[in-house]
Image (cartoon, rainbow, N blue to C red; front, side, top):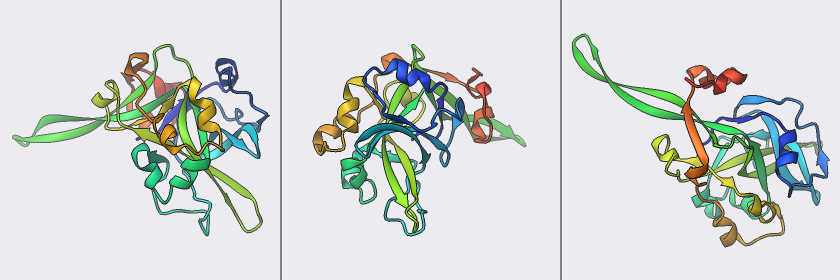
Length: 237
C-alpha cells in the first residue's frame, strides 16, 4: 500500500519533466513542502480536465462520482493494479480518468518481531519501523493514479484521487507486500490520454519500478503521526 508520501518542490516538476506542458496551475504549490502527505489531504495532481493538461489540488481518498453524499464507506486512497479492470468502483476511472501524482519519496512501515521476556516468560512483540523510500538520485517521480469528480446539488466540483499499488520490487519486498506504481516519463502521455481505452496496454504499465534506481532508509516514529510535518519526518533514524 501507500499511505504517506513526500512532495517538496512543485517547481521541480516543471523543470524535471520536459513532456509535461501544463496549461493551468491552480495554486497547487501553495501548501508545499509536504513531508508527511496523508490520506484525506488536498494534494497536487496532474490530469487532463476539459481537454487541458492541468495541475490542481485533489483530495487523497477517491470519492466516486455516483456517491449520494460525497462519502464512501471504503478505503479508497489506494487501488490494486491487478484488479482495476474488474473493479466496479475503479474500472470506470481506469478507462478514462487517469492521473499522475508527483512525489519525492514515500513511507512504508516494516513489521519487526522481537522476543522479550515478560515476568520470566518469552513473548513475541511486533513493532513497526517506518522506512523512507526514494530515488537514489533524489529526483521527483510520478505515481500512477486515478481520479474522480463528485458534484454536489449546486454543481460544485470535489475532485479526489487514489494511488495505484502493485507487487513489491526486490527492495520493497523486504519492507512491505505492496508498493505504489511509479511511471516512467515515456509512459506519461499514454497514461494521461483520456481517449486511450487500450486497457490491456495500460495494464502492462502497472509494474514494480526497478529497485536498482531506488534506496530505502529507516526514519523515526515521528512520521507515524499524520499531524507531524517537516523535514524531521525524513530524518534518518
